[in-house]
Amino acid sequence: MTEPTERRNFYGRVHGKTLRASQKEYLARDLESLRLPGVAAHENPARKPLDPDAIFGGPRPIWLEVGFGGGEHLVHMAARYPQVGIIGAEPFVNGIAMLLGKIRKAGVSNLVIHPGDVRDLFDVLPDGSVAKAFLNYPDPWPKARHHRRRFVTPGYLDALARVLVPGAEFRVATDIPDYVRQTLEEVPKAGFTLVSQTGQGAAWDDWISTRYEQKALREGRDPHYLTFRRN
Image 1 (spheres, rainbow, N blue to C red):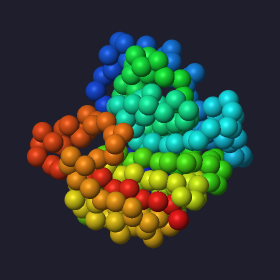
Image 2 (image 1 turned 135 degrees about the vertical axis):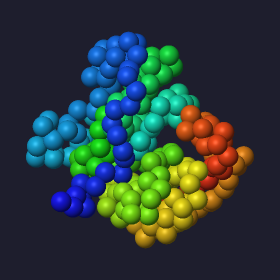
Image 3 (image 1 turned 30 degrees about the vertical axis):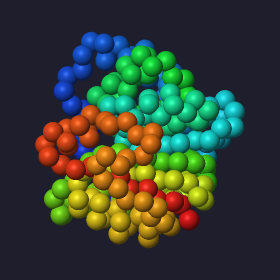
């Protein structure tokens, strides 16, 4: 049976290697207090929009990282910009556990986690509630028949554009040339303007190289950094 288009995942597995004891502890003790409530369907079956000001206890700019991997970039940005509230969405359990360990070490308090599909988050974020978004080293889905699973497709991009405030910045980092191609083709169609496209050694001033980028460099793949502005 063909999977319905609206539920086609842009990510792969949600479980990886066996978690270490410390990571299991992070999940058991820390996740619930950092998890953004009101996103999961069983908590909010009517899909009532979230109150952006209530997420971080008062009005502040909200940023969103789609698929935070091991959490290096998410924690780095939270520490560098304490005046901002950052939401990280990630379905991969191992990545969530890694992030929780980094949060403990860094002591940041201006981020929350949606440990699941970002589409559920899009369903309940109000229009124009996010000031900046990041997509760092997303699952490349390299086979041509899987390209429709990539995040840079209309179903995801239209939802992202809706929740972004006009003028918001959308950053994409990837080491896959064909992902760059599809990003340049699809993102402008969703209501974005390309601001810059750079390569290795010319990332954003506040960029921190992630474990996925370091793996790409070790394997001889060059990073690409694309910046778009929401129209």
